[in-house]
Image (cartoon, rainbow, N blue to C red; front, side, top):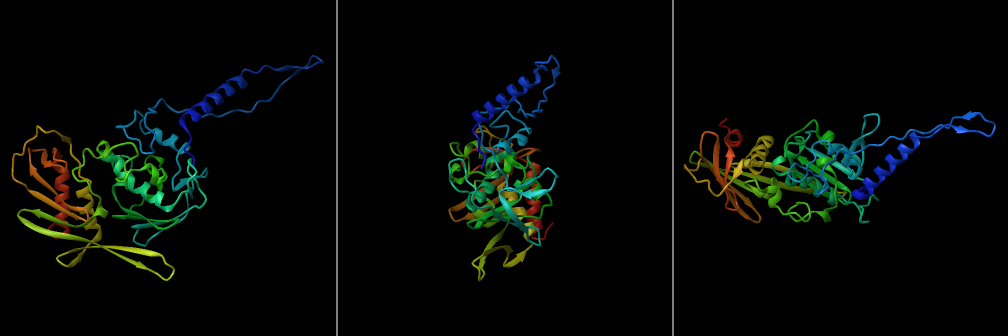
Length: 349
């Protein structure tokens, strides 16, 4: 893969500019017979980057970690590869993925990864690297999740189902999936060795990117979720079933149930996603609770149970204490959307 060092890239650009400048100052050559001979020169086209912050160069670059804006998207392809890309004819073609397919319901994309691709450290690219890179996107975008396209907000899971096969699952069909996967920021593929266990970029702390999230878990972490609203508690269960065919290929089926009955998958996954992607407008130990809890979520995971409670704070915000014990204010509209998603699942909306 590309992953060129910045110093080398800048040096190359400087040399190219110097060469272009020299070629532009050539004078016509004088022959021994006294006639003037014109020497043809080849035009050199050089792309020069804007002045952007080099202090951080993980493929996911947000305003929190760099002074660069959206223009960086066009330069990152010199350093990172994506699963798919557009060729010079504006046709969608494979890059790290040599082939792909989509399920009939539009929720599952299966990518066949090219073999023989190596990272800059000499290690081989595998499906595990691709899967972790995709799952790391919403984690490292943090409060900017959704600011670089909708896809990062509807990723349910990404799993390596073989050494060179990756299955990307979405919470709902999305027409722009492949187009957004062309963007190196945020969907450039990196070595899984460069990610922490919590999928944050190596040498960074989770607090740098999850500081405004009120829940530390992802959709795939949650086995079931208790929702208490208006004094009534209901449990929505996320069921995972894996089957293996005669060729050894594994297929994962996700369903959601409430009161023992299966509910609409899109509606339930929207509820789960709304819960785990809820972010605070601000956090401050000076905030104090002013009312009773209106909405309480209990997320059951293999690592334990996580409780998040929302109580009205003023006309614009709800008060919530994140799982690190920091009082936070959450936009009222976001909480109302979460409540609407819940009421839709249980048939009261």
